[in-house]
Length: 528
Image (cartoon, rainbow, N blue to C red; front, side):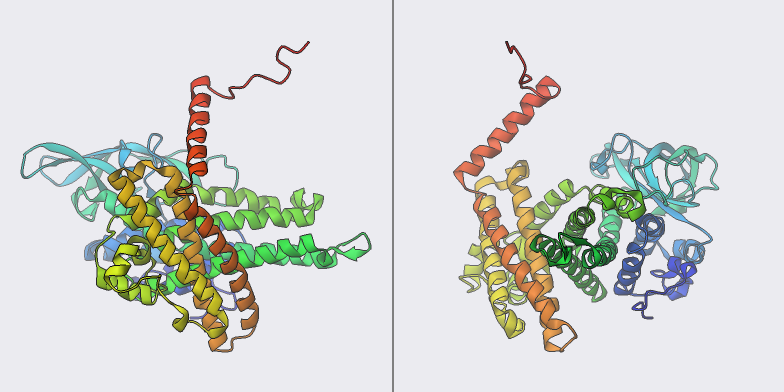
């Protein structure tokens, strides 16, 4: 089924990722990406409602549910008769999902679990009939006999007695979506409704979030496309100082950068979905990077769209302020961008030094598996397999993009060396070096962006796709700037001035904490 026309019946949306055997359409991740791109170009609030149902709401049943659970729940979920929600966040556990306090205790006869707790800011929380719920459960250690609390995931029906929802939250944006608290009071959950293995709920939650995160970049690429169309229409029709404002360099720069960011985001989104459709076993880093880049790029595009409109853009009638309000949450939910930056770096580093053969293969074609490049692209390993100066990818791309390919190759080598140096210097304490990890994550984000656009533009040039030359220009522009940002970020990891400024930032923050706010005196203090 093709979505290029942008037309798709809303009633079919719930079916997209559900296999045909269970009443769904069984479409690919790429088709799903195209669909959410179209939705994202119209209303992100509607996209949240639909995505909360399918991307994370019942995704756990698709990923780890047993056959009985799939047969029981998926047909009604696919038809839209049943709406799903994902219940993880609690008042005391935001980014730290492992600190949830909801509890579930198994009955003596082993037939049901008694669930108690409350969940916060749940998308579809007030309208869902089925919930994927995470709670702590007492687990006996087989070796020591010690009782430990571990998270277990459950499939909970609203029809189970004791499930209630709060009123819709009053939010800054995404007002077309329902967000509410969900409470579980002495809810009896049948033992067969455990989702996955007992005590493995944290892994299930991360699996769902990592898998569901991929669609965000596609949705926001659609949002950017709509914003660019509005900004372009205004720029070519608005006259100031005797000329159309599209003739002015400052406006041209804004339009150009907006388009490049949309191109990179779109390239990331479909490179990721294609790898998922090919059965790539590891894509969580790529999904996290795509989410971070897309949410930050789209915010910038919306801001510049308002700037091009001037005062008119600040008015509600222009419709852009609604998009900005909707966009702000995307840097927060499904993993805040701050936490995801740490996730990208620490996940990529944890297996550094292993799988030399896989590394060699990945260095020859880094577009295939970014995880390997991030985690194992290190100088020492390169030397061990005979790659001294960074991998060469020029032979894999169109000749017109040779310089961009060389820039990417150098950045991969430099990035690998930086990873090795940090691990040698800090070891397991690298987790405490968040200033450095942030810069490394920013470099990784640019590196993946380079790989995505080089791959896409090279294909367009090779197949003579319309406007391929335009893609090549955007690719060269992005790669040139990205390579310089990467070099700058990697250089600051060991630069004395930057390290001193890191200490200064920490000192300033601690002083503000101790004072409960701004520390310095007002400029009018003791004036005579």
